Length: 67
Image 1 (cartoon, rainbow, N blue to C red):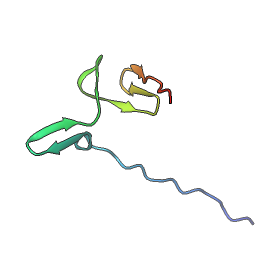
Image 2: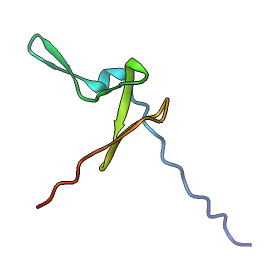
Image 3: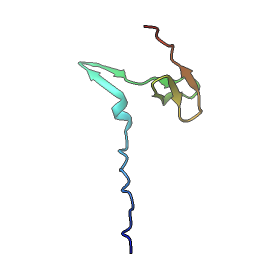
């Protein structure tokens, strides 16, 4: 009989909200934007050509840069 060829799934690392902030001296800054519809506390995902909210689906397209 042939051996089973199951692929191993990669374990997805769970991100915490602490990874979305950066501390410089006494100031705290956000690395990602908040969703304008959902309000503070809901971060938008940063893709190559857009920013989108996973909760409500709000999307902002980034401007194309001409070389």
